[in-house]
Image 1 (cartoon, rainbow, N blue to C red):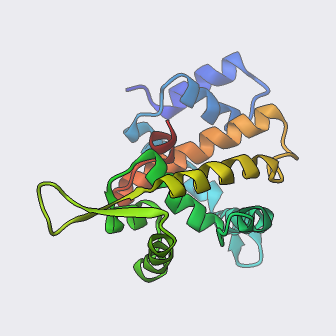
Image 2: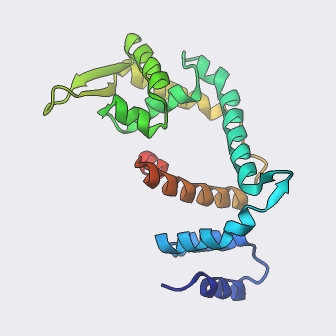
Length: 208
């Protein structure tokens, strides 16, 4: 496998004014970043990524804060829209949306996939069952296992939510098309890395 230095020199010759972010996108589009290359890139970038940006904060710390705030902005923007369908939060929507694409998950599988605590997620699922949005069925091969799927009413709810969310504020609107594409590729790589680490499905595999 070619070293990261060799690839960078090749890229720099072709794109002398490009940034490191552009290089990352180029690697993705050319299907270069095998696991070892990704690890090598992360090791080499580690010192610069952890550079202090404000007091005790590193750029890694700040990225975490920014992502957390964007998630909160998304929750704020979607709250009133989802409330029209008796959905309390984007987390509740995510549970139902996951079952729409992957029916038959167990409660544990569903909550793990959505990175949700058992206590919080279980309460949401109980409400869904009480509203008859979910159907609980015993596994055909192991009666001890209960599998979940959306009822007809649950499907109506999730489709209605999707239509309503078309009106949601675009939190990426300050970015141009190229910047949004770059952000997508970066977040997709991060999701792939952490999904494998925590043994859950990648977002891209769920919605494809």
